[in-house]
Length: 540
Picture 1 (cartoon, rainbow, N blue to C red):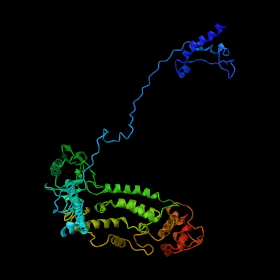
Picture 2 (tube, rainbow, N blue to C red; picture 1 turned 180 degrees about the vertical axis):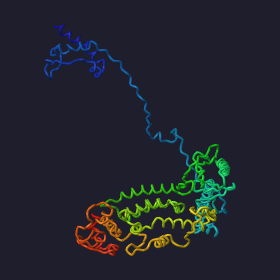
Picture 3 (tube, helix red, strand yellow; picture 1 turned 180 degrees about the horizontal axis):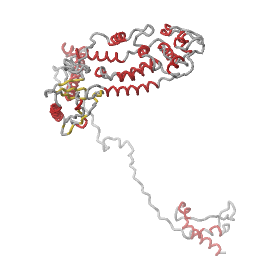
Picture 4 (cartoon, helix red, strand yellow; picture 1 turned 90 degrees about the vertical axis):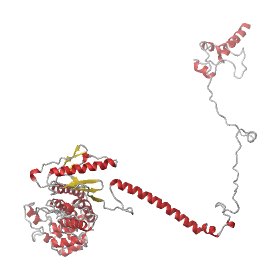
C-alpha cells in the first residue's frame, strides 16, 4: 500500500514543475494532447490519492518528454515622456525652474508741461485754438483726402512711367496725358531714301519703289541692316526665316523674278502671293487669289447656315438674317476697300447670293433683286462701295490715317483702279442712308417689294409658311408650269383643278385652295396670304 501511495506522488512531483515552467500559451502551442479521459473521481469530492486514478496523468509525461522551455524575450519598452503634474509646490514661482514673467513697466512721460500734448492722450485743456482747429473733424477729413490724393497721384505717376516705357520699347509715342499720339496703324519714314515702313500692331512691312530690281534689293537690304541694329540695341531677336519678300510689277516677261535680299546672313524667302493682315496679295495686285479664298470661306459658312433650315423645319428668319450678316457678310467684306474695285470681286457675290437664298428660302432661278429685297440686305456691290467710300473719307480727312496726304502715282493703264484714285467719298452722309440711296439708284423700286434693310412682313411665321410666302412674292416656285420649263416633268402643265395652267399667279386664286389673296395681301402677310401660303407650303 505504501508503494502505491508513493508512486503517484513521485510522478506528480516530477511532472508538475515541468508543466508550470513556462507560460500557458507557449505550452498550448507546443502540446499535442488530443483527448482527455474522464476521471472516475466523484464530482464534488476532494481530490486525494484514493479517489484519483493513476490514468489521469498517464499521457502527460509522454507529451512533455520533448518539451524545451522557450527563452523569454525581453520586450523593448519605449520611454514615455510624462509631463509632471502641477502641484502647489510646482506653482510656486520661487521654487519653479522657469523664470518668472517680467511685466512691462508703464511708460512715464517726461514731457515738459509747456510742450504740445501727445495725440494718444487728448488732454484738450492746454491746447491752443489753432491746435483745436487742426484736430477738428473737418481738418481730419481734409488730411485723409489729401493723403489719398497723394497716394493716387503716386500710383498714377508710377503707372504712366511704366506704360510709357512699355510703349517706347514697342516704338509707340505717348503724349503728356498718356494717350497715343498716333493710331494703332503707324507709318514711319526712315532715313533711307525711297523706302517706307508700315506698322500695324506687331506686323511690319517695308516698301521700296525703284526702276530696277537691283535698286530695290539694295535699298531693302540696307533698311533691314538698320532694323537689325535696332533689334540688337533693344535686346530683340530678329527672325529672318519667317520674313518674306514679294515684288509687285506688271512686267510679264519677268514674272518669275525673285528678289535677292539677305538679313543677318540669311536669305529672305520669296513668296509670289504673300498674306499681310489677312489679305492675300499677288504680283499684279488683281486680288484674284484673295477673292477665290474669300469665296471658299463664305461657302463653308453657308454650310453651317444650312444646318438651321430644312424642307419642313427651320430657325426664325430673324435668326437666319443675323447669322448670315455675322458669319458670311462679315467675312466677305473684310478689307473690301482694297479689293472692292477688282474685276474678280464678283466671285464673292456668287457665295453671298447663296446666303440670301438660305435666309429667304427661295429657289436658285429667283431674280437677285427680289432676293435681297426679301432678305432686307443691300446687294454686295453697294455695301462694298459704301465701305470704301467711308475709308476714302478717313484717308482724306483724318490725319491719323497711314495714307493721309498721300498723292497717288499717275496711272498708266485704265484698267488699274487703285484706292487713292477713287473719287467717291462720304463726308456727312450716314452709311445706312448711302446704301439705301445707291440701292434705289441701281434698282427700280418695285411697289410689291420695297427696298428696306429689314426683313419683309411675315418674318415671325413658321419656316415652311415663310418660305412659301417668299416664293409666291417672287413668283418663282415649283409649280407645274415652271417644272415643265425647267425640264423636270414631261406631262402637261394643267392645274389639278382643270381650269388653267398651274402658274404662280394661278395659285393665288385656284379653286382648290379654300382662300384667295392678291399681291398686296402677300406684301402685307395678312390672314388671306397666310392661308394660301399654308395650303401650298408642301407643294411649291
